[in-house]
Length: 73
Length: 408
Image (cartoon, rainbow over all chains, first blue to last red; front, side, top):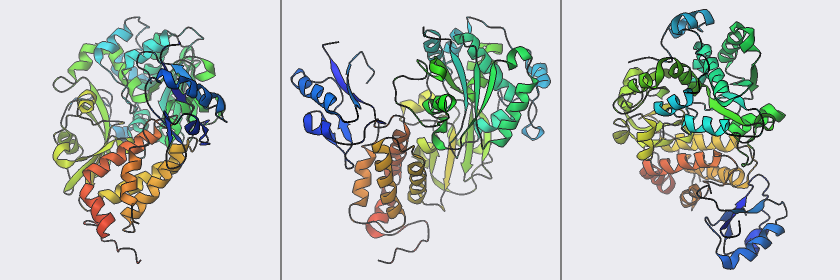
């Protein structure tokens, strides 16, 4: 599971605190209402560490890293 | 036109009872391991809107290891423009039940939930009577559940959520219902029309089903034709016929028309020049970027304004949001407000630009596909009614409706 990972979000849990966009702006921007827009696809190795911090920093535990298997987003 | 689901006695004579159903079609075929293969060859796709291949879904449920599967026959039908599911249940409840029982056998399920929109009174009544007519051995596996009246109630995770906890709101995926659904068990959620087709394919075979289609298309499909026709009607058509032929079968046009809403509120607007010639076949439509969705064909009369109709639909969808996910709750609300101002000739600076940008921001950003559906509808409207949107927003004029511009 170590090679290719992507950020995934539980949209129901997400309350739009925006912490993730502060911690990993390379991958996440916020829309006009403060909810994250996540860059699709595998996370570049150089940013995986930041992505992990965003995952652990999410106040509602809505963000997670998932292994990128074949196709499913 | 050839009828399959609606063959037999006319609608005016009410539901087909079990004795009539058996006399016309014979008994429920015994369980067969060959059914899923036949469904695959039949090219049958789900009729709830997404058009997922039926055989693939059934195999996914059958291959789950954890727990005995459940079948949920989805007759929620929250789409306001569609009548097909409610009328099918009202007229041919035993076809739906046959298909659901066949599905249960094929995936190894011991229980069938018949999930029916509570406001579809005729359907609820017919399905109750039909269940009562079935032999005890079948009746014991059937459970009727009334679905709350709400657009999202028919969304598959919402249906499962309601059966489990009495809350008809979508849940986050994963897990999808085929993995963990009713009581945590693998659940086959299948639209009622789809199941009715299965009941016939199991009896007459996939070759017969394919031969019902027009050209290379397979089978028949139910469509609700409304708008600029004499009255909104349910018809069964061979898949693959031209949209114009379906409109003629529904009684023909009652006025000029510049656009058609194809696929319902989660579908899209198509300009009439393109629409009349479209082949009504799920695969063909998908290739050209359209969708038959839940089978709605709503013809916009030339006396109605596409911008105003779109604003009305977007407002409805914003109101029907489950309000669980931010982008849908706030995004749709904002889009609805801006579109409403544009439609009402009261646009403020930037409204149209905002709507154009926001329409591209919603897809894939909810637990369910509600924001995707609304975004798709809106994007099609911005394309098909581009000139009218600009006229509304920039000049505060409507070329169709005689509405007065807002005072200020």
